[in-house]
Amino acid sequence: MNERGEVSGAGWGRWGTAEAARELPDGARRLLAQVLDLAPPPPAVPLDEVVLPDCALDDAVLDALRRAVGDEHVVTTARSRAWHAAGMSTPDLLRDRLGRPALAPQAVVRPADHAEVVAVLDVCSTHGVAVVPFGGGTSVVGGLTPSVARHVTVDLGRLDQVVAVDPVSRTATLQAGLPAPRAARLLAAHGLTLGHVPQSYEYATIGGFAATRSSGQASAGYGRFDDMVTALTVATPRGTLRIGRAPASAAGPDLRQLFLGSEGTLGIITDVTVRVRPLPAQSHHEGWRFESFAAGLDAVRRLAQDGPRPTVLRLSDEVETIIGAAGSGRSDGGCLLIAGYEGTDVRSTAEAAADVLAAHGGVPLGAEAGQQWARHRFDAPYLRDALLDAGAFAETLETAAYWSTLLRVYDHVRQALLDALPDGALVLGHVSHVYETGASLYFTVICSPGSDPIGRWHTAKAAAGDAIVAAGATITHHHGVGADHRTWYATEIGDVAVDLLRAVKRHVDPAGILNPGILVP
Ligand SMILES: Cc1cc2nc3c(=O)[nH]c(=O)nc-3n(C[C@H](O)[C@H](O)[C@H](O)COP(=O)(O)OP(=O)(O)OC[C@H]3O[C@@H](n4cnc5c(N)ncnc54)[C@H](O)[C@@H]3O)c2cc1C
Image (tube, rainbow, N blue to C red):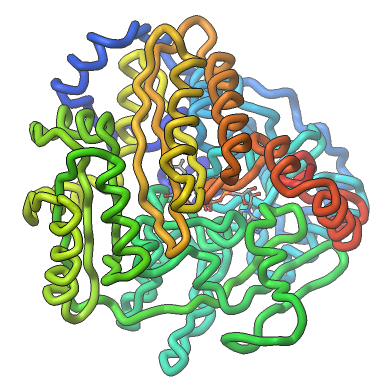
């Protein structure tokens, strides 16, 4: 049994466990020491030593919750409550390391199935206790930290089964608490894959993907998670919705879209039916070098718009390419592009794409560069742990924009971050999710922590958020809104849409218990 609702192995105050810790490569460490003022952090407070106020729920509430899910599935230990108090943004990890996690739940409740989720919502509505649905706990936007102290976390870790597989239609119904690696194993037993591989793959869950409109590293080939969903079941305080009975429908607005991305504010998703595909017979990754980010973007756009489209398509800017090279020993300069292909005849697709890349100035770096990326595709969060351990601060943010404005958005956001961190910061960028009409932009910021790393980051992140909105881009492409992006989200969608969202919430959640302070402005 571990702290995170007994389902995953993630660490405390870090992404990975201590055993999985990784050292910063020497080259990267030297480079950082040259440009940043590293400040070794104080020793982290172990989870067992975190002190929280006692659970403030009275016995009537706790007894009703125990009746709903069974005694042993209502946990009030400080250990479990602290562990469920927040997600995995860098500020979350730093607060955990200081032994001061964000607002902890009064209890962690672990229903076994849809009926128990409904029963928990009933108890919480009756007693005015807020509810935070918890999947893998990997939110990086404050999506697990509500605005009220009187709340319980509903950990969905016991809903971890494949409910049904329809090989003819190529769909699978998956329970919401299934962690991605387990979903992949269970589907592979049927010769199928979801093809959804975000960098948080090791711990994130199916329900979390749906609730946040997640997008994975192979989105160029498999699409975003919300593209994959054909149906879903949602428990709300007003009753249950089962939405989606055909691959496509003209029966009114698509209500699936109301709940995809609703971040636990409109209901608890208990299962999701997704499109699945046969496990790919072949896979191949290769690297390409472009002289500049702008040149690489042109090539990426051509593949996204006119094809052939790789399964993975990812372009690093100059700084990300240099930092990656410092870690790996490569020093090709320019901008690294990774193209990955999965399917039955990857060679012919790769050759056709190679013609496009070469015609746009790309220089092939071969399969080793691609395999190197594939081998290390889940390393970044472990390297963040190592950076924090080394006394640096590292965090990410992302957006998306149309092709015609993408480079301008990139320049503005990058500059806003550099201006907000005047004593030196490395800002790394890449594009890794492409569409015919545009792409996402992802930024990693590495800077000195200073005496108030969280405050410094909030200032920098606010500057980036303002730059994103001013440039006409979206405040988030796949991380979601959470508590952190609410202000910019309200600006992005406008007053009428804010009122619409509030009205829907009032209808399905009249007592306002679902994730107060998250998403809905
Ligand atoms: C290191 C790292 C890398 C990441 N990389 C990616 C990436 O590549 N792509 C990407 O899209 N995201 C990424 N993320 C963000 C995060 O992993 C995703 O948002 C993910 O979808 C969250 O899934 P989860 O199961 O951990 O959800 P949680 O973090 O547990 O929850 C996220 C939000 O959804 C709500 N929620 C969770 N489950 C349910 C449910 N069943 N019903 C209703 N609401 C629910 C929660 O209340 C919360 O508001 C990354 C995060 C980290 C820390």
